[in-house]
Amino acid sequence: MSDEITSKKNLLVRQQLQDWFAAEHGTLLLEDERKKLAQQLYVLFGYHILQIGNIGGTHFLDGSKISHKMTASLIPDDQSGQISGFCCDCSNLPVAPDSIDVVVLPHVLEFEANPHQVLRESERVLIGEGHVVILGFNPWSLWGLWRLLLAWREKPPWQGHYIGLTRIKDWLKLLDFEVIKLERFYFRPPLRSLNLLKKLEFMEQLGRYCWPWFGGVYLLVAKKRVVPLTPIKLQWRTRRQMIATGVAGTTTGMAPHEINRQENN
Image 1 (cartoon, rainbow, N blue to C red):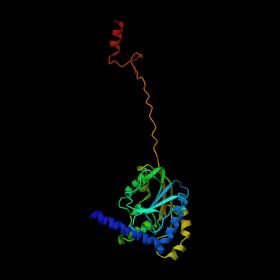
Image 2: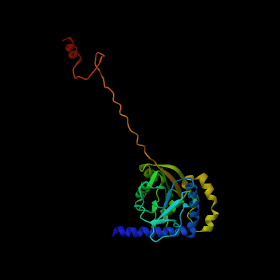
Image 3: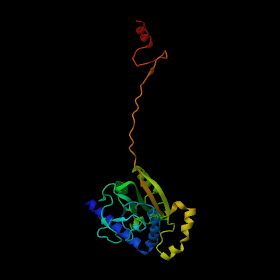
Image 4: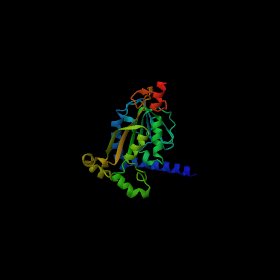
C-alpha cells in the first residue's frame, strides 16, 4: 500500500512540475534550458538518443543530430511533446543494456525518491563512451534559497530535493562516468512576474562574470568510461638468496658453516 501511495504522489508531483513549466513563470526558464541543451546535444553523436521525462509538455531533442529520438514519459497517457516513446518508471527502464548513445535527464533526479538508481539505469542502457546529460536545480543559488523558504508548501518546483553538484559527481564517479562539461546558468531570481524577469535579463551576463557558481540551474555532461581489459603477462623470475660468503645459492635452510662441511666431505 505504501508503494502505491508513493507512486501516486510521484505522479502528482510530476504533473504539477510539468504544469509549472508550461505556465508563464516557467516558460522563460524553459526557453533558456532549451538553448543550453541544444548547444550540447548538437555535438553529441550516435544512433539513439533518449530523454527521460517531459517538462512543460515538450522535449529537448530538436537540437540533436541523432536520427532516432525517443522520450520516456513518467506520466501515464501523456503524449504531449512525444516523438516516439513510452511510459515507464525511470528507475527501471524497459530498454536493452548498452543500446543508447545519449540519455537526457531534465530535472529528473531532484524529484525522484531514489536518484542514484536512476543514474544506475542510465549507465546500464548507455553504450560505452555514451553520454548522460543532466539538468538540475542548483541548491547553492537564489533558487535553492527560495526552496528553503517555500518547501513546506509542497508546490512545484520547491518540493524537490535539490542535489548539489559535489554529490552528483561522486555518484557519477562510482558509476565510471567522466564529467566533461559543467555549466551553471539562469541567475535571475524565481519571480512569478514575466515582465519583471525580462527586465532582470542583465543579471545573466553579470552573474556569469561575478558569481558564476550561483546559477539557478546546472547542466552537466558526463561520458561513460570503458575500462580496457588488457592481458597481464606473467614474468617468472629465478629467485636467488645471497649467503654470508657472497656466493649466490639456493635456499637450503642450512647455515653457511654446514654447507662448507658438506663440500669438504
